[in-house]
Length: 285
Ligand code: NDP
Image (cartoon, rainbow, N blue to C red; front, side, top):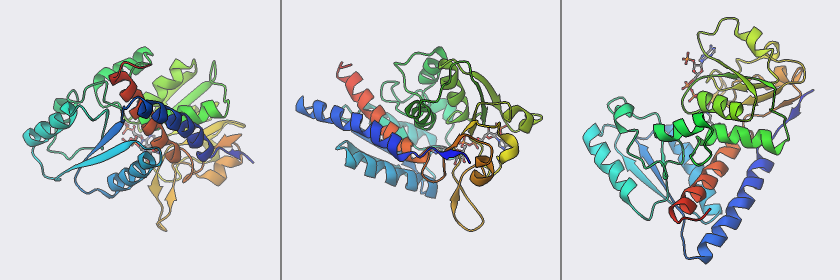
């Protein structure tokens, strides 16, 4: 039976580092601040925003939320986002995505200064991950995946990793981060043929699909590490992942649970990224 890799101890370790850094900054009279920007009233956004606000409060990072109406036009959106970006008291900006259809992401993705872009919306930060330049910001969720692997001493060098999902928020950056740790990475998506055959060869299997319980034991190599990024609601209204945890555990050596896995580390990484942005803004390393 595979062991559960819980997120809490990982988040606690990240937060210890964060709290020490906040203390140090405050002793220099520097107040780290996060601005969350939300457009509309989507439940997923509000629930992530709530946990982010609680997390920032727990470590004394100032946190404010800018809410824009769901039907805001692109011109007004740009004006408001630029104003947030120009606010010198704000060190990190989290823009909740996806944005409503009337906002063209390609026209707005350069607005957030790369040094404040703590969830990797600006293509400059995407390019930095692709180059393996650690000065930039990778998105919080794939970074949380890497923190879990690191905390649990999972060897990546030379290992085969398969990432199922190729979104810019999770799948692609997760693949690039694994590559930068010398894993041999395959990226899978909805058009991948023989998905099960590709997945079952992986020593590290990352599920970032958005399909409840799709990954079963048949996709898992004996002893593999399964990281379940999915957050779905099942037919009974319960939160569940993209992996069928019990079925996968029969083959996996380790697997992250949902809830209580990757999701619980994401806001800790968000806090860590706010501090990194704050240190950059104040020329501290
Ligand atoms: P997207 O919908 O943007 O991307 C889903 C990806 O899965 C796409 O690349 C898609 O392929 C692929 N896919 C869909 N169906 C299949 C299939 N049948 N076989 C193979 N691949 C498939 O989702 P996100 O990347 O934003 O999120 C993925 C999951 O992670 C979701 O459950 C989401 O809720 C969760 N999530 C969790 C977070 C956390 O903090 N834990 C944060 C963000 C997301 P294609 O590109 O071909 O369409």
